[in-house]
Image (cartoon, rainbow, N blue to C red):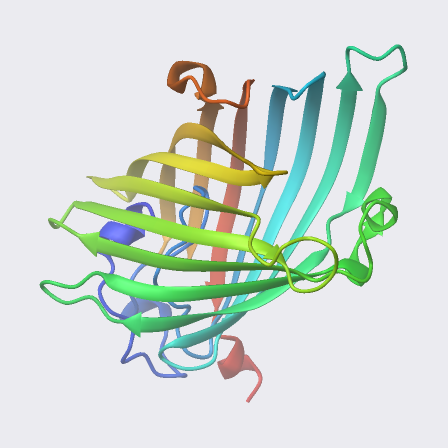
Length: 285
């Protein structure tokens, strides 16, 4: 979601390949929250979004597992036309996993998760009544995993994610956004849809290029014939240094204990990142 720029930006559909920073609206980013932005990267522009996140989680089903995760997140985006962008996602992780009910040493997984490629397609542009509405489709390629994640991934199984993303500015300073997602495997022994997500976020423009957001999101999954979900709450701050450069910092927590979910778990996460864009098509002429 754009955070500050989500609230301030208007439709980007009339952008030309040769536009410069001074004629464009602020960068619209997918980070730092889980709620992906419904806005498309401007035509001919390349956008980079990257950051670092630390997460700590405890889960009991049926044994207790404690996981520490250090993750470098990177998303590359390029606008092909007024409604369509292509994208790639790279996540590098180091996980320390401790199964406390088993008498063994904690172990580590280090490497790059299966590289994800995909696209966004804008279905409806924002109007006075309708929210900006966009479809996202991702496919993770297991043969493009590295390190321990290549060994632990089924190389003959393609993983997919589909999301419907909507966002709407309610005032000049306040806006909301939501995502509905499903995911699963495209071939192999697992189901085509076996997990998914829901999120709702609200952002406010503080002025002087500062913005804040608050978000609720939920991950759900089928384990055997049972349905489980894990709820989270997070929030963060963004700062625009220019129309094309944004910094962010955020933190969140697992609120399963407060919601009394069937999957006993707890944890928290914190992170920071940077996003920028440049007119790649202009430089490639």
